[in-house]
Amino acid sequence: MKREAAISLSIAVCSLALLLPNSVQARTAKNPPDVPNTSTAGQGEAARMVPARAALIKTLDAKKMAPGQQFQATLSGKVQLKNGPELPRGTLLIGTVVDDNSQTSGTLKLALRFTQAQLKNGQTVPIKATIVGVFAPDSTENEETNIWNANTLRVDQENVQSGVDLHSSIDGDNSGVFVSAKKTDLKLSQGSGISLAIEAQGNNQQGVAGSNGGA
Image (cartoon, rainbow, N blue to C red):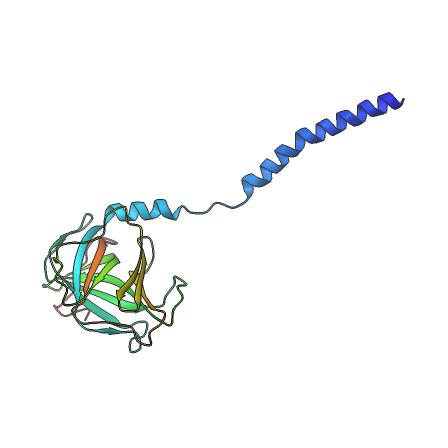
């Protein structure tokens, strides 16, 4: 009787041991839940973008600009969008100051988002642009150079200006966030050069009446 009980107990233990791995595997398969592969998404975005260079028309001051305010820059050279028209040299790039959604810490922040390119005839092209570099107004660097390539998915550049860092991501909503951790002011001077990764959005282009819309 004792021997039969021992055999039955052994069989039960073996059966439980066989079931446990399957049970653990089933729970592991469900946790964690599916998470989007942001790296893959960023690579797809980067493949559609082309490099561009622009210059700020006016100084941007973090203390004086609030979310919703517009800013402008002009293209330093022509840009052929992969999924849109050619943007000639001098094309106006229009953007908006936005709230920082990157959770970046700092004393002062200036989050920017380019939204459209306006041609000289008034036609506008919806765009998405990521800021990948900033240069001083008196920089002697060739305007056609750009530090971005399709393998660059994120930029964390320190001291783009004294005490000011740049953070941007190809698959982010904003074009870039400038952060000052130590200084009490954060300004991007008039004429500052901005390197961009840029693409057309939506229906590639749309017309607007007049030649001064979007200022």
